[in-house]
Image: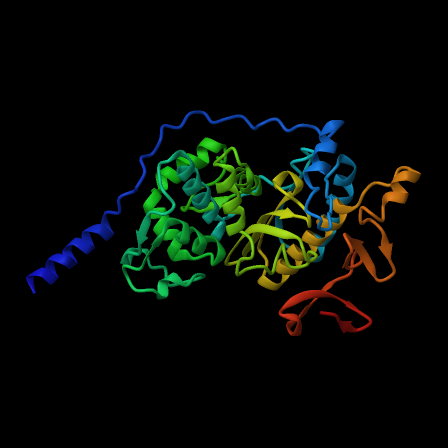
Length: 377
């Protein structure tokens, strides 16, 4: 009996006084944003060359200055069709061009607050401060029996590696995994890392707010091999792909497109933020980044808006300017041709501009264009 009481006292003490695994570093003024090379001359060739060698269909996307106006107009029309407060960022690392619509507006972060935990954990692993194969055990104070996740159904003391916990954190958006890693790293340590990389409009946890611009910065760090290591960056992007929540930015995009992303929703706030790799893309330089945050809206409306914005962005970025006869003759190879039944990119049929997506539970819940009154899976 005495032994049991002693064990309970130890457990209570541990829960009330969680000890962060890492020491908070001294944080300086923070680095300046890295200069992005302009996509001119040989840089254009290097992008094309980086996509060769797989033998798979290659879909090129690029955001140019000429495309920003049409894309902005299209996204605004979609926003008007689904009234809400929006913050949107689209960024192409190969050209350095960025489209921003209220990107500094502060939104409730919801589960986007799991991105700082992921990047901080892997940054610590890259520096040798932690080993992703180290074990972490679930404490009673870690259990978050609400919202998303499955770990709350496991018994107290359930043990896994930090790497496994990170997978639950992102793929299942597991709230208990978040609490475990938040405890392990320490909130001050995570906040210091956000400040160090320049994400200074983000209030980690309380009041748990962020901006589309800060979320873009987090995605850039995750996708940047020099921030951690090439292997660790690739691992994070893999963890963020094929999650349990593929119904927003990834949903309308053609097969072969890979989306490494993180969703968030709470109350009337909904978001999705990711790195979109068109078919044949090798790395983040071949991809583009997209962040969509909404508030004062509902689940169905925000979901439809994000899907349509995602598809419109993909279509415009995958279209190539036809300013010469040579461009026109090459347009078929580059996937910019139009057909009567839809828009084709990389041999994939997409809906026509302005064509609404219709939810079809018979197709595994996929939203598909409705043609001639019939849904095609």
